[in-house]
Length: 237
Image (cartoon, rainbow, N blue to C red; front, side, top):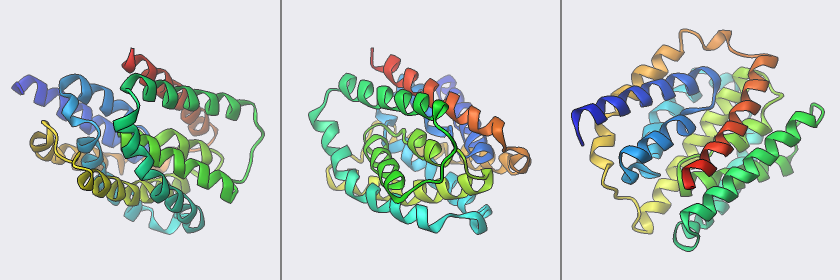
């Protein structure tokens, strides 16, 4: 890659890490399309690698606010859905997968806009975990389902729990991709050099994360989910 492409990606990774560190979501949706444009080999492995230190930091920073019950249900579903995500990489054309993930994300967000406030049930956690395992393993993008299920919870709880779920799930997805022979990509080496951008971005987020929350965050999550779904669909056109 050219130096300009590396700088471009470094800025995107730093901005994505800052966004997710402050709000709990956003890294993969911001970075995955840009990384894919520079080098398709970055998706999904490099995205998952970049998110490891990011989510480890956020989960540790707000570890006292983690919803262990919800994280447990989500992780169970994530483990079961990961093989399906790997299978989709081989069975479904990228366009079909993009339409499926993008369309379901938009539908879930629109339903959430009309639905009353709710306390997530085990069924909701299982559904979010399954969708996340499916989409993140296949595309590197898995934030919208988890963001939607935690949209009515306190910001710190959402950030910490989503980070923990991501962290465990990313390890599972990377192991699954390695076993299936899909771990190596053309951008893998470069992705390791960009890890410092992740560290800087998430560190900067610690300066503002306590001021992020409330109704504005919920609507921001729903808008993010809708934009995410549209972007995934447009990326496959």
